Amino acid sequence: MALAFLVNGSVYANWVPRIPEVKDALDLGDLALGTALLGSGLGGLVGSLAAGPLVARSGSRTVTLMSGLALTASIVLPGLARSWLALAAALATIGTIDAVMDVAMNAHGVLVERRYDRPILTSFHGLWSTGATVGALVGVGAASLGIAPAAHLAVVGALLAGLVLVSARGLLATAVDRVGSLRTGAGRSGLLRPSRAVALLGLLTLLAAFVEGVPADWSAVYLAEELGARPGPAGAGYAAFATAMLIGRFLGDRVVERWGPVRTVRAGGLLAAAGMAIGLLLDSQPAAVAGFALVGFGVCTLFPVTFSAAGRVPGLASGAAIGIVSLIGRGGFLVGPLMVGAVAELSSLRVALGGIVFAALAIAALAPRVAAAEPVAEMADSALGPVP
Image (cartoon, rainbow, N blue to C red; front, side, top):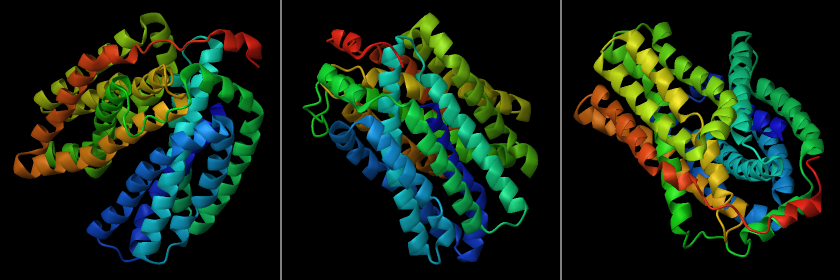
């Protein structure tokens, strides 16, 4: 299971450092590149729509493995693109498959967590962050050595596909998916009319996506344009944010186990709000970097805790519930950066980043929503035996 999260985090991260080269090779302007990159987000929405029914029908184990192999095979496509349309289509394909794998592996992670009877999903997301960090470093190294994007991505895809096959040995049997579906009621997809509990968890995930996505797109711009940082130090804000996320996710399961999901989410929202407020008000580079780090620590547990809660909502299959929550949450990654840009145009980037404070406070207010009711039919676990 851990390898699946590691692979998923590595795939897209290998592509990101090669974007400038592909942009130059295709002679794309900023608007054209931005529109092509949007294909990944739109594909993610499509994949989130399809993932729930796929998991309900085939099981999270099968969908995790098949989508993992498809994702590692598709990563070479941007390197092979010879036009804007081909690049947009390649990224839309990757985004679709990535979303399917994201829902499937989180649904399977919820089953594993349920078998251990203690929080472990945040550590899986920590491995995703590890994969993203390693993937980005590999991409930077390949670019520095002058390796062509297509060759680099093809080799990485083959190696990661091997890890997907190895991960099959550690996944739970498909029978566990069947039992999990019986416990939560797989008969309804919940897509057309999601329950209030699922809709509110989706809103919580959307806010988390906003708080997590905005620093990735705007922290370096804020440090450079508002605080006068040079190109290298300007990246320190996102580096601090990502590092805090990575550390926090490996510590997060212990925090959730000790404090419970509600207190963890509430404290995380308040920490992120306070950190961003201090970083913006003190008007200095060190304060801004520290503020982004506190945002990373605050938001690090939100996705795994929310997915875990969605997987425990009664009356709905865990894969379907996580798919709905993921679909709503992806809207935050799409809309958030655009909203910040629009507000920055009308006012200032400092004012626009204040949106993180309000979103984090809303997360703290919605924290009780992660206390989803525990599923019924606990005797199903005993029928399947101990954790393998």
